[in-house]
Picture 1 (tube, rainbow, N blue to C red):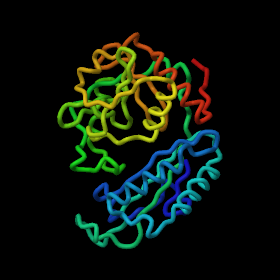
Picture 2: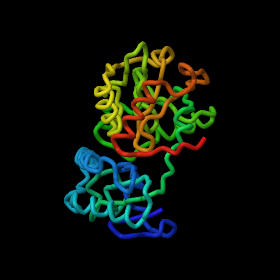
Picture 3: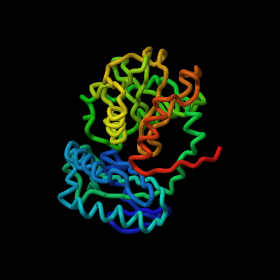
Picture 4: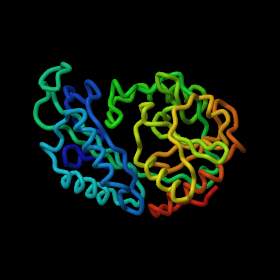
Length: 293
């Protein structure tokens, strides 16, 4: 694992970030998660675009202290230092150190804290994609856009953490979260799609979901493949009649949910729609799967 703090290589076991850093005190920050395949960061510019938007929405003066080029160069340097072909990058930005605790952003002094973590990544095997994962519908709800704007990928993830713990306690791999009106929104860390009667559905952004970069790619690939896709506000009951359910996120691309609340979804294995979209996703980004069982 490679760690950079404010542009400098750091030891993750001894790196010191101030206890007055607002990211630690209040979750006052934003982040991006990128995938490296073949030594290349996938959709780097799109991730930097979203990071810039998040920082602006949260009023974090990121680019008053760091240029976009500097961030790109640091990411590429960290990938080169890591030396692996496959990795996950966590790029985090906090408002920085404050001179005392308190909610006012004006208490922050100096520059934002920027950390880059490069973690070696073992892609899922083809057999794992065929098996899929299990999920529950969580009792914890997605924070509405009126509280945290959906365009900000903020570091405050407590509802997702609680929903993840709930899923783990139920023996499931993931949790589907509803909005405050009971409409399907997303999972703890991924966007959601389902297929019913040959039509693809995905939650409408009005549910408070974070519109993912992988989600956007899958919408494009679905259109290229001739699938009809509808963004909808739908209750959790809509998932009960789905032929396929799958998630989209940076680290896996397209991954089927084959059991929901302990009940098989469709045939209980990866379906043909998610398999086709995964094939197209892997081809677009030149990612290879391991064929091991």
